[in-house]
Image (cartoon, rainbow, N blue to C red):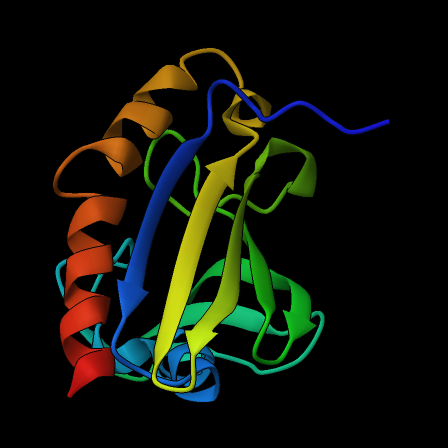
Length: 159
């Protein structure tokens, strides 16, 4: 029995000019190289985006004064093939500490050949955010959401 795709999910896919190990590394531990500074939910200016490279690791923004603003937890750490994390951001664009009220981002990496990788991102489970969840789906699916981040990532990984 197979599960049906989430009809409310936001999916972005691209093939990058990079081998699979580089594609995974840049997306995960290299996230700071392509994550826009204005995509930050903390109070102060974003100095760095951090991914702790392990199951249960945190995703957070480190502000200029050193304050950490958590916004995700690593749910799958399978180097070179699958990276998944919780989207611990509430509808008010503040950190959400209740895991039951978060959504999920799965990123898979598939080698096309030695120098090209298809990267597929699926952000799902928006309903967990509660009433008004559609606003989160619409925001991350908008041109300034995952599609813009996909384009930033593609430029950096190909360099």
